[in-house]
Length: 230
Ligand SMILES: [Mg+2]
Image 1 (tube, rainbow, N blue to C red):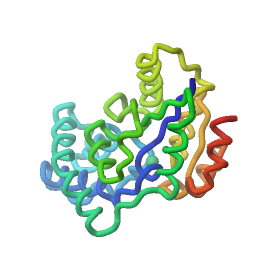
Image 2: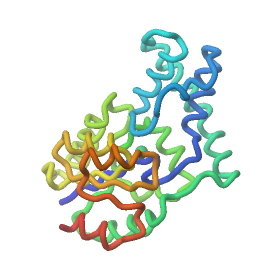
Image 3: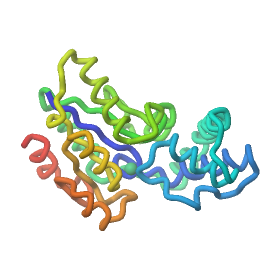
Image 4: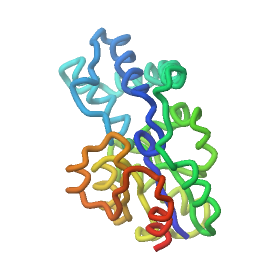
């Protein structure tokens, strides 16, 4: 049994900045501060971490749990419109080759496909819905499962084990992402890690994190299948 965990933003799709704009609008609506997301990099972080950083930028202090919940709710209210705008204006795109890779992996016996994403679960569904990829994933770890990526990934694996009734050891888990943060989190849990450079990561940081596989995208299907089958 193997579990393959896909990051969402920059790995499955590029949602044309929909998440960033939704979070900016949410904070502006609640606290009046504009464009707070320009003060930090959202890529590779969990949503809870991004909500906290955005609120810190707006308030100049750590937010209370109630303030974080309010911004999450406002973000999720705004996100559908931002995703639709991205789709309508052609800024929403699938990472090349991802559809075919997922279809091929699904045919392999004993391979479970899951999400390992920093997005809160409803946000992940909203961002993925236009891609048509959502149905490939039977389980996942989400941004609502913890502040850190490693806790998100471990939660995903725990859910896959619970669903199948089989223990999935760390060396049977493959994490695929687009930033050094995906790699660091995957390695911290003892999982295999692979990266696409078509997303939002910085290549020198990705290289330094030391994933087993770096590829531009998923068009070289054989490379990815060999790595996961290996
Ligand atoms: Mg990403």
